[in-house]
Length: 220
Ligand code: PRP
Image 1: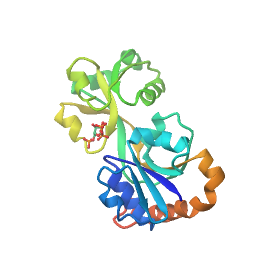
Image 2: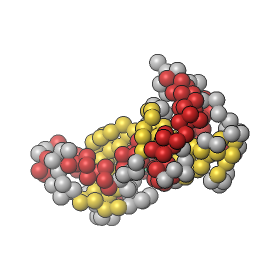
Image 3: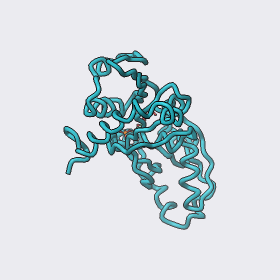
Image 4: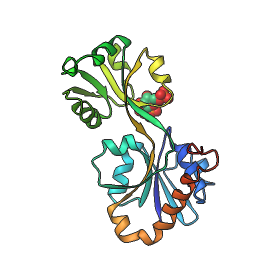
């Protein structure tokens, strides 16, 4: 039975759309409630917090998963990215009070030692390091937008979809750093041992997203 992990939260509906578009059964998925394991026909779906999905896949309890590239970038789990669905688009950004933008328009040296609140510590360090800047990160998971106002951080590094959360907290995007979309990933073991039963799923997802799909975000 192929096991597919899906992230709960913001991108869950896009995931169900992809699964449905690929022709897999989604009747019970659409009404998942708080169930974390759902069997649909010959498939099993595992619902996990986005940051747990790489572990489910790399540990071999899920064969495949849909997960945002923000999560795969941050994770050090051993995953193979099979395809970019182009769905669930968001972006990573440095955000903060408007006045901080001036520091970003000057020399990189003026950013040295910047205090950055984020749940994406590895990605934040890597992103700033590529600009020649070493930062100090403060791990916050969930209430990161509070950090600048409380004096805990100079800015935040986070995922942005509508920008509503930033605006509601008096913050603005200072630098957009990477595009984010849902990726289809697999673990090493699943590809080695069960590719025969997974291949048709991977190809069906690929066909759906490359055709633009119904209401597809890729449609020209
Ligand atoms: C993310 C992010 C922001 C929000 C941005 O949190 O951390 O809080 O979404 O979305 P917006 O630009 O549409 O306002 P998420 O919903 O992933 O969950 P979290 O609060 O548990 O981190």
